[in-house]
Image: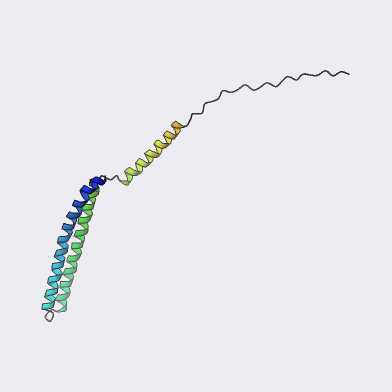
Length: 134
């Protein structure tokens, strides 16, 4: 299983890094543009326009974050599926089966108690009366 992991994880990480890098670069460029626009027009920008720009950037950043989170979630699920890990339900069922088999094996190994033949009760010894001489 470790060998399988070596085959899947590097590709997943490479693909994930590539796909996460693109949205983050877009955010970086958008923030850089906004900074340039603000610095060039700081005297001309009114607060309403600035608030609108700020709100748009925050909204875009949040949407990109959600996209990145969804991407990571989906690809993590795909990677886990490739490993074919058993579900908790399957593991619990196997635990019960192992316990049952262990119990059955222990019962099979234990020597069976044989019913011992009942011995006839010993007869009481006959009392011999002693004749007493007088």
